[in-house]
Length: 289
Ligand code: NAD
Image (cartoon, rainbow, N blue to C red; front, side, top):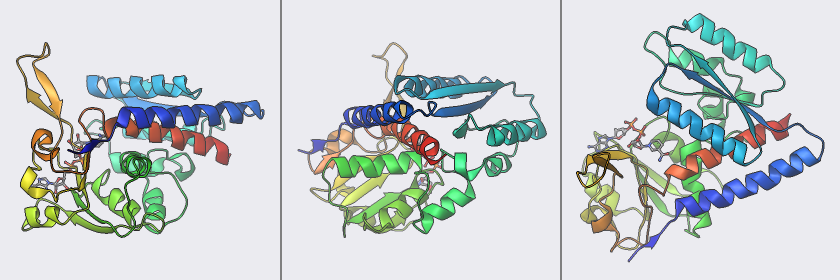
């Protein structure tokens, strides 16, 4: 039976730590950290994520300004908003909620954010700093995973970490983090073209699933005693729920849990960590001013 890693509890501890550090920061005479969140269009999921970030910020004493724009905003107008936020000394962090409408080049917008305010760690300068081990912002979901491991007492030094998924927001930055000095894992990154995926996965001391396919990781893919981190968030039909669906991860939890050493549930595992790291990053941006 695996030990369940309680992401809600660990994220709650981190939020408490951030709150204490924000209190200390403002008690020392500084203004409260301030996060600018840019939302374009009316996608309900994006709007809900943005509300969640604003609420979590307020709970720890971080101010946040949500700037909403219609999806008719031009790329040029959005870029000039980002330029204005870069120059605004009352703003510490800038987050542009993705996806953006098709007529706007996301890369161009992200590249326009000052790396000093890039609390999402998506700017190429932030990604480069991460890959060569320089101090900088932490990528939210991967850094959340590392903190789950550390705070659960899971040994990473010399451990073989197999990551399934090579996206720019999870798989690749997580590989960089796990390789860092002090974390010191041996890393294998698998993806849709990987051969013998089960054989690869079964070698993992730490197995991370970031694929986006429900129940993809089955019991035969897991080494007994491994730590299994499930990043996936997938909807599956469930007539017993009022909304007609429930959320599941990329791991077949019921089959894997009896053989794993540790496992994260979905929901309540990796998910809550993402906003917790965003709060840490915003505090860090404010402290650097
Ligand atoms: P993505 O779609 O960008 O990448 C998926 C990756 O899975 C790709 O690299 C692809 O090569 C790999 N893949 C697809 N099919 C495969 C197969 N058959 N075998 C091996 N590899 C395969 O996804 P993403 O943005 O990294 O997100 C992955 C999942 O994590 C999604 O369910 C997403 O919703 C979730 N997610 C959760 C959080 C969180 O906070 N918990 C954050 C980000 C993403």
